[in-house]
Length: 340
Ligand code: KG4
Ligand code: ZN
Image (cartoon, rainbow, N blue to C red):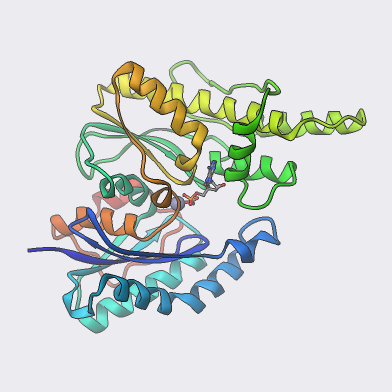
């Protein structure tokens, strides 16, 4: 039986709804970004984000059904991001999805946001287990070992800032618009030189990350230059920062692949859109004969299709979520995977 899941994602500042068939085929994926609203504040304002979700959620769900040419009675289940994320934002999607599931008598599936980012790769290719997932987003930087479909073991994570957060802070210091990741990426690629920046390797066998020292090094370089009444080339600063980030992410991800004997390296999250990171990973994985999966750009940042792809995991096991489910801003992958 074909499974068609209507998925909803509202964990941060994108309101999105999608219809996904058998966890692999996108029938629709409508994303409404609040970026322009948050731009003038230089970051996401949680209260504003929740209000915007409330304003748009109904239209986005309707648009996703229309685009998929699907009626509610043709759906198999309703899925929604349960967490992690901003609690007020999550709540809007959770309430809308529960209401639809209840009123149409459809099974309900809560989904972990990071599982969604990882399973976005299933919308553009096959996942091969065991795999290593390098998760790089605005809120997370993690290396996850998946021995099989649906099992998640975190090998390492950031001890301070997430990599996307560091990108956005560095962009702000360079007076670039929010969200800054794509702007820093563009500047770094245009640069004809770089200001050398430190690399936080931590203990030699650690898969953890730290980006706050790097962020401070960038801010110090800019402050010192301005005290000396000099200006640094922003492209050189962006490039120095980006090279440090790419070196550390690539080295640790490849070490994890080798040490666990993984079949594939999967990259997930908004920072997977980074052109410098994609090019480096393609180069080293090509040289080392490692299978690499990175989603197309439109599936790297937050979207509901990835939630529909991860929800299929639960559908296959007929493992549905009670309508008592609460939005959980601190939900861990391990907790989510183990709940029956
Ligand atoms: O996964 P995502 O859409 O939201 C979270 O779940 O956090 O990731 C958003 C993050 C932002 O910090 C944004 O600056 C970063 O992804 N990002 C990038 C690029 N595109 C988006 N960072 C570096 N280079 C990019 N090209
Ligand atoms: Zn995300």
